Image: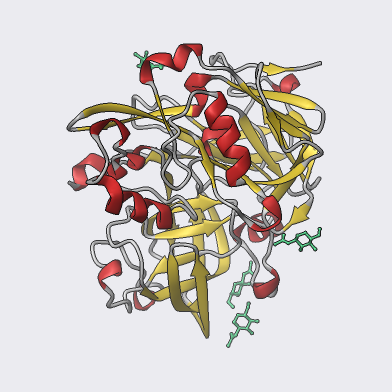
Length: 391
Ligand SMILES: *[C@@H]1O[C@H](CO)[C@@H](O)[C@H](O)[C@H]1NC(C)=O
Ligand SMILES: *[C@@H]1O[C@H](CO)[C@@H](O)[C@H](O)[C@H]1NC(C)=O
Ligand SMILES: *[C@@H]1O[C@H](CO)[C@@H](O)[C@H](O)[C@H]1NC(C)=O
Ligand SMILES: *[C@@H]1O[C@H](CO)[C@@H](O)[C@H](O)[C@H]1NC(C)=O
């Protein structure tokens, strides 16, 4: 089993002017999914699966293919962990060797006793995620991220975890803005830049077609001009400095309906797999793109043969159009029974009708999270036929 994940991570540095750019390559998980807020629905799908006819079956394990993780080190000598890099949260946590729960088995766990740079803190912390609850306490140690050594990073050592026993990752690195609840804990991003490792900018490239071990890269400190057509980058101001949230002007199906007229808010989230929006809006999009009307909990199937002829869906953000074609927003899931195709648009009513732009969106554009200027940029990927219509 483990050998399937012996993917080598390549860290390297590029000097550009004064800025030190650091990359971390991402492996695409094949064991699990971490779809924030989706898990609840997946359980429903699972329980209904046997009652559906073959055509509507959605195989849960196939959500596996849309999950990205990378590797970090903690402590001295360095203990290695697989983590999600999550722009949708501000907290960072790692499973502790003090965790006895089933959900902590078969994972690497942090042992503070084995680290010479560990500093005890011990403040108790409890986190509620959509998929379950975590409990633990704060600890401080050196964090090695993409080859950078970040001193005295405070993180949560998880001692209780009540969800997802077979997850592939051992923790999360929160890349969100500092959370109001944990204001006096500096996030890794704050520490990276306070400790002089470059500009307060990081960029994601998530590959949509992973045929080798490298599923993409995160670049801390700038943008990777080998991957993005720099002149196509278009920025939008962050509207809420907690999640990475921006305003969308509207979402339009080519030759079809338009939703979010008059504008809506969206969180750009590297740890969510799909594009999530209000149930009514997403239903209209999915019907317009020929999605199966028997959607279960917001997830629609589409006819695999129709992908090439599906209409484009256009997100207008800060006056710019970002276009997703059928092949961009439909994903294929493979099971014993063959291939089925799912729409990457999922309905869920979140507070204030907020949307989430997850992997289905991000993988089509180079995505820049710029804390210095409080903005998010999307740019055209080189070597890929992803079009951004630039006026
Ligand atoms: C634990 O860390 C928090 C956040 O950095 C800090 O405010 C608090 O003083 C620390 N407590 C101890 C006992 O070190
Ligand atoms: C980290 O903590 C150690 C011990 O408290 C201290 O000597 C060192 O200066 C700290 N490093 C930074 C970058 O704050
Ligand atoms: C994915 O990559 C493989 C290998 O490079 C290639 O053969 C295949 O055509 C690609 N698929 C798509 C949809 O681009
Ligand atoms: C919803 O919008 C209102 C008004 O803009 C704002 O005060 C509130 O904080 C928002 N709630 C959430 C959960 O974003």
